[in-house]
Image (cartoon, rainbow, N blue to C red; front, side):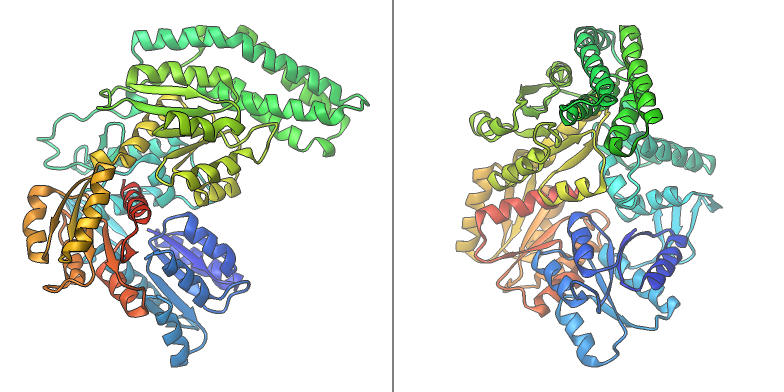
Length: 610
């Protein structure tokens, strides 16, 4: 489980972080209210531990702003003031519980467990699935009664799967939920943890309990492992077909001269840096541009050594003003080695992971925004057999116009354009302002934590780190499309107000959602097994039966406990917020419900669930 600790006392914060990490919680720490709020908005947490007295912004204000954004993450207030006024202020701001300093550690841990159970709707602290058990009070995992020795990350995977047994977790979601924001792993690392966990579960007789849902991610196997059908292999395990491999090899042969030319430009620019020339700044900019492009693109062809050389050159170029003459000589040697690597690289040296799944029901229109034309041509060619129609736009100034003309369903956007360093972020904001529902996959060779936070806040759907395999890009496009295509989403509205429900139905129909409307909680419960909704829209003011009670019942049912439930409310008074949090609601919409807010909120909750 992932916890955000916002505490300005650094000694206390580090002590709490270490204590919680020892108990297999993943903990991010912020030391002031402003940075804490940024993290809470940018990432999804299971719980926030929030000090009241914070620099830059008080804990009360942070909580108020989160609730104003409809963020319903459980909040435990930590306060050194034991007066009832301080406690009331925290609860009125939307906090779920409070604890007075100095902290009693056993009580703190008990309250954390209680809030996490409440958020998951679990009545029993022990989590179980087909012989696999996890006791969060002892932090022990057993399989068929035998203790399973797990690493911290493997324990986190088991807990996440057991708390959400029906949910499919993509690799990007696993990274967000199980790794702290300063240590983002590679996709290979995620797959390695899954592989190790499967091996350990098999040793205690649980079989292949963690299954791969092809093109989407991982979940606990549904039904008996012995009787289960063979699932599709993970993308990395699928062998490339002969035709795909040949096409990929042909692409490299076609692109290789362009990359050799880039390496030659890089060589000349680095050589010029050691000379006293007036255009030194221009040469540095050109060198950084070439190294940036090469480090990301060559890795996508599977040329790992060449990609690493370019990345090493790029890192040194960022420090060029601090480098000595010997460092400049080293740069020249690295650039020459890179050029030689590309000159001898043949089609046999490139590697391809292919994706094997059915063509989508509707062709996916993908707009690729990147100035590396060799890479974009590679992606466009390899995407075509999977029903993905591509357009390429290397000029960020023309992207919004292209979106208006072509109406893409997914955008793949490189954040970093050498001639316009901030153009990617400005474009991301413009695309989100134009259409919040349009999935934008951020695609960049620069890996900075601040870039990830900023991209998330500006509406980026997924962050892909170059170099990345074409198969990963293609599967991510499919995932982004299926998570945002209303035609694939079924909704159930629980609303006795005929006029209001018809207005909402018209919005849902216009966007292509599959929906049904019922007027009572009893009708909802009877209809759900047949209709299989992926989200509930519930009026908080139902005349017969409480919508909050319905949400609690849904949370206690294993089939539905992870189902998004959006409440439609008249206002966000503290008592309403408290009821929504206690019941396990996912979000709130103000009545009368506006179309743009309704659609954005539905797609947001569907994407988070996926």
